[in-house]
Length: 103
Image (spheres, helix red, strand yellow):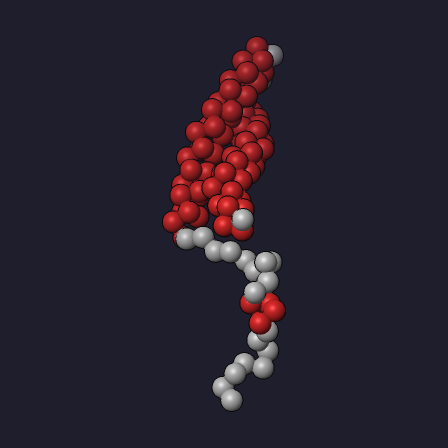
């Protein structure tokens, strides 16, 4: 009489039951995402900041405004780079493993 009244053998045997992968896979995906985002966002921010800095300095913008504009643009450029890195690592390390487990 210790049986759970809410359990169902149909749900337990369902092909929709979530497969599990180890925490190591998530940590590896996070580490790769972090390093990729750090390196690529820094590079993209540097490139955009350099181009905008050269153009604005040639236009005679003072250094304080140049720093502010470069920082804001560098941050805005890093957002899509971070998203692309996130999609890549989730697809490569997590989704593929889950799909392999599923069959």
